[in-house]
Length: 114
Length: 118
Image (cartoon, rainbow over all chains, first blue to last red; front, side):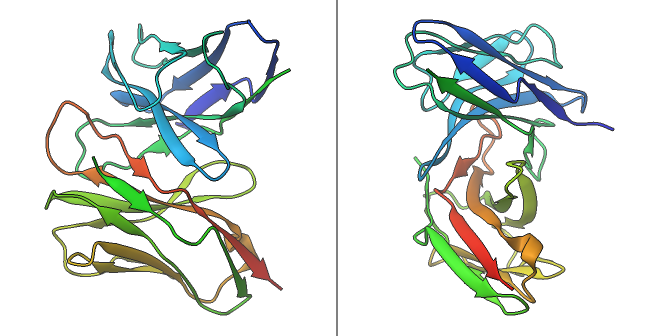
């Protein structure tokens, strides 16, 4: 079955450590997105990529980095520069300039900083 | 920039009854798309329903329907015959229909948590 796989589901990090969240899709989608979800704040866009080897900052990119070396993969690194990294992270993808614009989501990764 | 507002942090409905979740948005564009997503306790986001702004007819998907008022920039979700499985967070989202470099990114509201009473 096609879908988006995020790993790990739960991750604990000590302050000062970088961590990388994995996102893999087999939907042959062109565009991929990373959102952060906090209670009471909805989903906020961190980074997005429309094609391989290209990505753009979203609304809250500070303290995060991404890469898009393969169409299927869009890993997110939460760096030590991120002041408040404890959150739920959602990866999503879409076919590109589809008229429907529907996003398909992974199951998310919960990061907790100890 | 577009904004999406959900003014009801929490709602409750009796099983088999009808409930309406509110959403308003702000945009200067005339071509756009609106979505309602459901996030159950499993946290997987699921598309409930979508509406194209150029369509006057309100979208319907089984027990879910919307009341799209373009002039008022309002996009409410009505859930009929509520079921226990409808209990979840519901997010309203906006996507521009204009071709631009920002791609298909969605702007989300803050969500409404719906509880269903048995």
